[in-house]
Amino acid sequence: MSLPLNISVKPAHLNLSTSKADLYDSLLRQLHALLDGEPDFIANASNTAALVYGGLPEVNWAGFYLCRGGQLIIGPFQGKPACRRIDFGKGVCGAAADRKTTIIAPDVRDFPGHISCDPDSRSEIVVPLIAAGRLIGVFDIDSPTIGRFDAADQRGVEMLVECFLSEGCESISCWIPCCD
Image 1 (tube, one colour):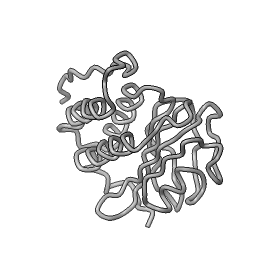
Image 2 (image 1 turned 60 degrees about the vertical axis):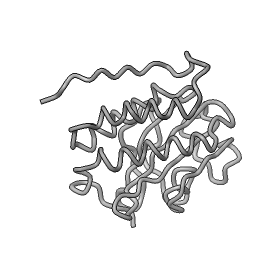
Image 3 (image 1 turned 45 degrees about the vertical axis):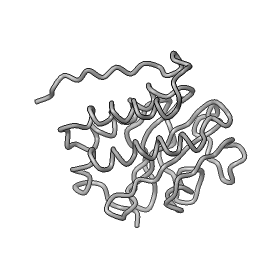
């Protein structure tokens, strides 16, 4: 049974006085509500991507790449169609997975080995998904704006990913093979 949610994602650019910390705190509260009581990984990943895509300004893609067969495979996302498979070490997503650390690419065209899934994307932040000490994928956010992501975004997105992993992944071990 599904409970009605009172989640209202309003474009963040409408309130220019909102600090990034306040914006991420608001998104975190909304994410807690979205994940509450729902054990299904795909449902939770889909809602997480939608919340971030609709809630952050200057974002043109938000979603998951999941480990399968030694590669990252496209998972739930919001935005234009994207690359279906990414090898470890390739592009920003593959590098973040390989290094198991968050990567911010201020200008993706300057990132060694960048993969251009969407030529409109100019900056990117990728956070690895590590559950029970094992890499299961990455969470990726793209922007058409050069230099869009900074340390405040890193803290905020890492908080959202931590929430997703701790509250939204009860069923993850059932179907996602780990990369390592």
